Structure formats: structure tokens, C-alpha cells
Image (cartoon, rainbow, N blue to C red; front, side):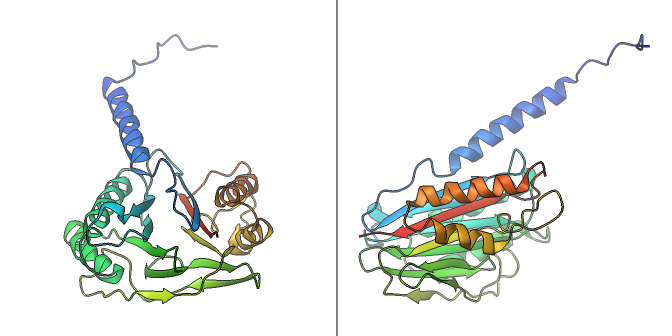
Length: 266
């Protein structure tokens, strides 16, 4: 028997909050790159997939073509992961992105850039306990050379096409927002070749689980990269996302997923 009591009217505050979240979601999506940079020598594709309306992951490209203190043959790629989800994570994500973009236009290597950004983030987060991991990659496509800093983030994967072997781009450095005393050391690798692939991701990719609780894992990611190494960066990215989605089945994603694929070309 149906209840004779009418449903309570929907609160205007609920509608207002929902509209605010939709606006915030649109703004955050617009902060992410809308297209990949077109640069001779590298093929790039990236994506962030959020587990809820607002996320803490982000990726960004910094083309220094119009920046006086950087040479035009460099591209900066940043991937970040905030230690939380939802509104708080989205606010910190947008702040860190802005700080890195601003600081990257000034002199200094990427280790110095992240050290300065860390100082600013520490002042903002205070005792709140929030932090963000970052992987900052600087590419010189003409010289087939890379430099990177790993600030508490997952090591990027480097796939050598000729030997079909994977390496991890490691390095010391704590997450941003933990302590102002942290230093960040820039790493360097030269001699990359056409066909080599770099994958930068957040742990939401390999730590995703299926309904039984099994983890997707890095081995699956490596296998997809290896099997599709002759394809474009966009194709490789799409294959990983498709495989991850099929693996999760009906499971609700517990974390954001961000992936950037870089493939060196002739």
C-alpha cells in the first residue's frame, strides 16, 4: 500500500549545491589540456578520468615556445595526484597546477622549480595534512634527451623499443606539501631512440580492482604498451583505458586515473 504522505519538496539549497558542483566540474575539466601539443620528434596523448565529479589528479603540458628563459625545443609534462578526493582535492589540484605553470616561466631547473612550488604549497596546506605527488618530465625531442624530477610520485615507465625492455624513471624527492626542507634532484637520460615510449601515470591505474578484488597491476599496463608499441600514443592510451574499464566491470572506481603516453618519433 502506498503511503498517503507526500514527498518533502526538494530543498533549493540542494539544487544550488548541485549547480555549483557542475560548474566546478566544468572549470576543472577546462583546466586539463584540451589537445596534445604537436611537436616534431614526439607523439603525445594524455587523459584524466575522475572517480567522482571532482578529482585530485591532473596533467599538463608546458610548451616554452613563448617563454624567454626557456629554449623553444623543450616540452614540460607534469602529472600530479592529490592525497584526497572531491572538492578539497580539486582546489589543491588547481592551486598546484597554477603554481607550477607560473614558476616554470622563471629561470631554474625543474628540481628548483618544484622546490619553490613545495614551499608555497606548504604555506597553503599548513597543518591540514594534504599533499600532492608530482612527476615533472622535461623533453628535448631534437636531442632525444629527457630530464625529470620525481616528487613522491610513481616512477614513470620507459619502454625501449629496440630491446623491448622496461625501465623505471626513478629519483628521490618527497611529495609536495609535506615539509619545506625537502630538496628535489633533477635526473637526466640521453640517447633515446625513435619508437621508445614513456608512460607517466597515477596509482589509480594499476591499483584499480575488479569485483573480486584483484588489482589491475603494472604488468598488465606493460603488456598493453609492449603489444601496441608500433601504434600511436593515442592508440596506446585508448587501449590501456579500454582494458582498465573492462577489467573493473561493475566495480566503482576508488581513485582517479591519469595517464600520459609519450612516444619518440623520427
